[in-house]
Image 1: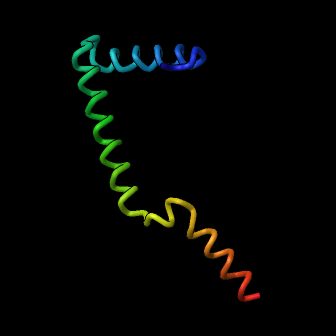
Image 2: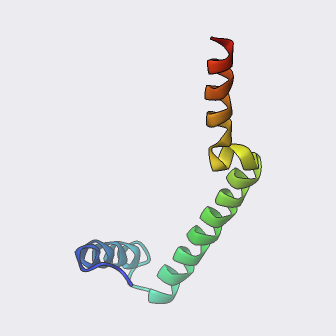
Length: 71
């Protein structure tokens, strides 16, 4: 559930979506689902392109350890 401080922002975004869709709630909801699907697909692409170690931060740690060994 959204925090109370975010509710006015969400209400504003809902009003914007409805205005863009000329007050058609179904069209606004459709646009929201399409945008969400796009963002989810993009997130999957980015997650797949990052290695598991990099995503966990292990690459940074390994680089620091290697630098220490070199010095």
